[in-house]
Length: 337
Image 1 (spheres, rainbow, N blue to C red):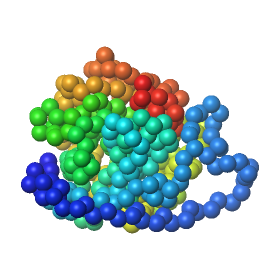
Image 2 (image 1 turned 180 degrees about the horizontal axis):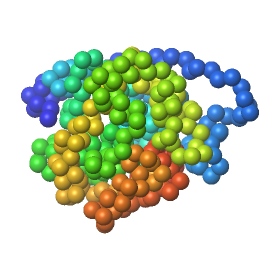
Image 3 (image 1 turned 180 degrees about the vertical axis):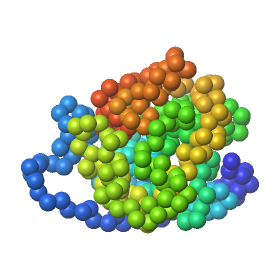
Image 4 (image 1 turned 135 degrees about the horizontal axis):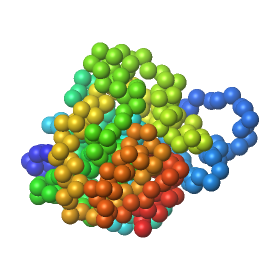
């Protein structure tokens, strides 16, 4: 938890704000059969994908704040866009808040969106030799809310972010959360840790010997190849995968992948607390799920429907692990519905 005295002391001082870092130019591809076709238009027929600015444009919309996290002051990127009731967007692994960019036009018309990069991700600080944890990321979210003066919000969480959201639900149930949660929407994540099926690269990163070596040697090609099976067949993930790589590799972030992957162990350790919070919460829940996801897809959906049969559940039969990227229009409609 964030120490109350630290939060009060932080709130009493001006928040240091910095521009987000510059983004390295994208690697140019040789022209092929798709030459001349707008990059964002090269998608499988019938898929709904909104136009979105690149990573540099996304970072230009936000700024880095200095927040108290884990007993230290950390530089944390956040985008704040739109007007209306607050909605907090929690991204997944190994990506960043940019995953939500395609949803922004629809969501920002009705909500003030807060989209942070977790510690170690995207444009946020990436300390080395650090014991990253999901509890600490929940502390980061609480510190951000305190800095932004948020008193109530709706959560939308994907992948890694679902566990952070579950910890926030647990704190709300204990009465220790200062912010009122008006709702929580979940997308493709390990809500039930025993059902989570990590990809081979993730499993290797968890190994105490292999993990650090992989972090040192990983290239864009290896990284993008690892992402490939998590997108739906027929979906052109090339642009999205490049954005995820560039966010991950910002400030050498790929070199700490073996530290960030410990969230899988966190889930196993705290699974009972987090599944209990999910199933007992009074906060209204909703689920938007890519059923083709090999990591947390139809098999996870079956458990959710079994344990929470009354919760609204949108099953996207043609979408895999990345609903905010693969089907942003439908995800936005579900979140606003």
